[in-house]
Image: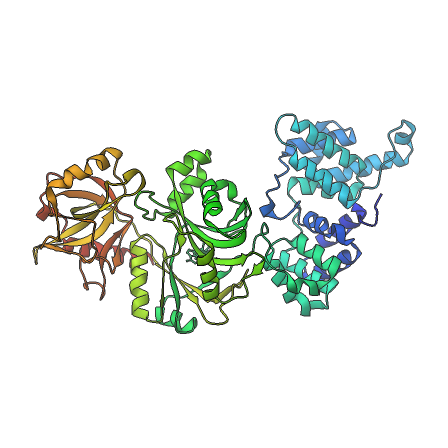
Length: 604
Ligand code: ATP
């Protein structure tokens, strides 16, 4: 029986039935407003979840029902005491198990009405309530592992036996994941503003609260019990994801800088997965761009968050990126995806280590920072975290100069980033949760191409590695040969592709060539830990050729203030059969770059 904190399930399914027959959003809103007004506040969250065919927001990680079509056929057959064959035949005819259950329920209801069931003692259906249905469905979802199939069958057929025909239709559709009534979040928000506030005028308040706490049921419960106005004071809450702020896109640095107010932060735009990291004491939750709970995928990030977030409670945001742990070089997005596809997360974690580049904080120890301008949020972020190579603030500059912007962009791309993000820093540069706007503007490479040929480059310098490569040379500075000037001009740093054996031998390999200063025939902006006499040639492959302000190969030839570089370079093998002057020339690299450009143009 329904108490004051509950309501007959029938009332909900009658609304669902009405919603199913219409498609105009305005009509839907009216129906929802009526339903919400009649719903006790204690269960309005459940009503909303069920209406959307769920048991909670997606990020709550409630297991799915885990039942097949075959399972439902069996449950229906048990509930209505019909052979499975008959259920299947009916299914073939009606094409919807919900309708099958409805039909069989009405037939069995008719026989009950005729007194047959009660005469043999099978009557006495009880009236289902929203709470009962919701709680039973929750138990169905939670039943996992051995013996769970029997439990699920018992629970579902129990529900169906008590359900009237319309209720049976929707119970089955919810379990099957086929309740598609088209009631979107936006319509629910409209209806909440009308039902519990002063109409559409209050919609922005409801929407803001939802953007800060992405849980429709939770928001509905607050406004149903306390009124819409209370929502104005809602702050982010640890454990409930914030809908992410999104960026616009432009392709001209001058225009971008104008749009953000002349000057702003320009940061590396990393190519990984966005992570919204929540910390409360010893608890950590990580949510994705789409607000899924991805904590389980990243035990390493969880550990870093626990160790390096100094605040008791905080919500920070950053990009999780695959990296080479020894050189900290960025690795392509595909590697992160490879990690996600692996079943054993602990193996995947070792094979594809990640770093986190933080770019925002929205909440610290009870304080809502979304309303603060970006410079304030950034200084808070810096003050609450400890930075390490794997856990650091995104690389950035503050600039209003388009040339500096471009130079930084090229550096970002040549180091493996996807481009840059320009961010406003004026007084109104708040964190606009759930909105795409001009406070953040992305500037990406608008092309993708592949480097098909390998190149042979000369090692002119070396860097010491960290971790496994501590004290060893882990990265080499590589150069192309320029016959015109008889010099070696740098193209890239390579730290990937070496085997453990290669690394072990690296120092002794280069020892005879180490010199205390740059070799006179080497032209380099970068200063390595060790300089070498140009002698050893290696074959290198990369993802593509790109422009870079850090490398001198073909300096100013394609673009003022930039040379040609290789993105994501990998060592393939030593070419001891080649002398340094046999290495790929700068002219050859220029031609490769031009061919690549032509291919991109043709593809457009
Ligand atoms: P969007 O997320 O804007 O809908 P999208 O999914 O195609 O578009 P992108 O165009 O690649 O994503 O750009 C936005 C994403 O860039 C962010 O969601 C975030 O994951 C990522 N990103 C990387 N570096 C930064 C940074 N420094 N600041 C903000 N976002 C960053």
